Image (cartoon, rainbow, N blue to C red; front, side, top):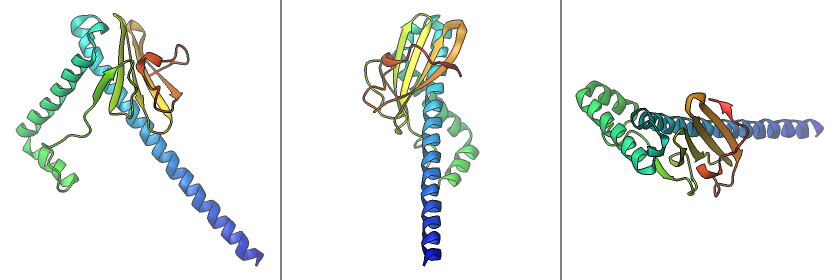
Length: 177
């Protein structure tokens, strides 16, 4: 009887351990997706800065225009390279690469909370500082900040999703990206 009990306990531990590993993998994937979204936003903000010489112009409106341009450029690329479009269609059967290239990003004002990594709260703090925030769905808010010549830094804080706003970016704890 003890043998059956110990086998049951071992099996439960393995299964629960598997769930924990799966949960950690999902959490890590959500954090990576959030970081990729933030890096994309920062690239767009840096492109605006390169032209305007100020992050003040990295507004919701201008970032939305930049996102639309990226999607339009991708569609043009696919029409000029049908081999790539065909390859993408093979990767995802029943999906046309021209229909959609993935979740489009939505940008919101610094005072509005991000609900997931495709909704990014942005804050052009001043001419040389830009901050973006995105929620990971796992209880974390990811932040990315650009400080002029100092470069890009990242931060991560616990969040219930209601306060994942660029305006709430931490003042300390930033690490180089």
